[in-house]
Length: 276
Ligand SMILES: [Zn+2]
Image (cartoon, rainbow, N blue to C red; front, side):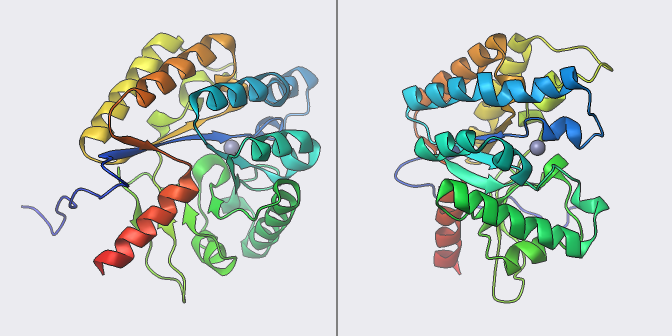
């Protein structure tokens, strides 16, 4: 028996594009480790690598490929590495909210979650000169209040859910409707490259192969391939080579629209409004 679920009509992407693709980066720096209760300097230095070594190379790579990405930055990281935020903004990239100290919103309660959202908007707007309109939850966990708080604070989109290959609209909250631009652990570098001492590090080659196959598959069904990288993980030379190859492949694939999430969200909203 089937239920009422049926395949959506193929989305109309801008121009003659048949699919979309986004390169997003979660700039967690030391907060990735601090949120796990780590204070030990060597472990924290892995996070710093993401900002001091990896980020400038990633920005160079994106500039060379003429790709504008989306960077989600915790407020704590922005305050401790303000020049990194300015460099990202100067490169024409989008900046989105990603908590304060990379805390899990499921653990902190509604009032604190709201406070953190307000603070991160304030800190990022001050440094980037532009108010963020997108939100990605630290550790990809939403509380029962998250979407409502995002709507209250005027966000345009969330990039957290894992249920679709195409964007969609969340049910309206008051006057506001949030666009969802779905993600997936399989398009994230952390499950493959984050080393916590408990599992082996994966070789970049097979991981790249997996991402290419995901991209081809999502493109074939006219979806959005929403890659999620962490500068401290993807920025090691062996993995940066893999990112370079991935970017080359995407750029040379015909009729794929590569854009920051803010533009994908705006397009999707317009498209949906036109249909209703
Ligand atoms: Zn993160």
